[in-house]
Image (cartoon, rainbow, N blue to C red; front, side, top):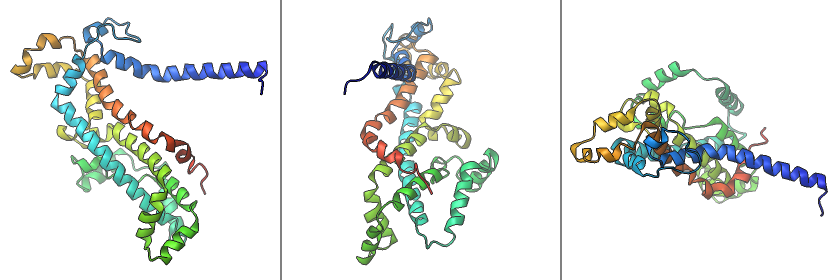
Length: 297
């Protein structure tokens, strides 16, 4: 079909707007990557836009030589993997139970869940609760409090209720229990929703820096995002330089190209790129998975 002049003009305007919005969204990330590959002393002069002016890998050398940052990266990976698996499992089990009309008090449980989406006890009562549970300064304080997401539960529940009732009935005729129906029938058929919600949960765990900064004082348990926040809010680079051992001191002149800003940008790249690499593998599930739950009871 031949497009009219007005349609061509509208399409051109839409493409231009999309390009501008895409550029505005992508440029800050690109600029941070450029600064991370640029000499810190040169970056202080300003004017770094699309390409490094003095290319260097010293910023990343400092990041990967610092055991604290590498330890934070390992904690972030472990937290993301364990937190995502347990959260998706617990939320799916909860959602499957909420699909059963014979569940006593089902409507009451649903109301209680929805209330928690709009109201919380606040930071101080939450801290006191976590302290009473003896989770302070432990790895599990980053996993247990966010184990079940009500929003994800509603999406799971909507997807499960959309499945043919015959699946459940035929499985029970073959002798499956509730656990068997969930793990052998329901979950294997829930690929799109599992992939989508697992990605959203993983992004939450990977990016969260606030909870560890409140509940964890042990430096060895801090994820890399919290350590990145500390770098951004303090002159940690000078501290690192002063604590260098004699073997690393010989490289002092070479390290003078590193500044707090360049180091923070390099750490930001190390903390951001791994989670970005996950998106291409689950992108095909987005359209179907995100639409699930758009209509809820």
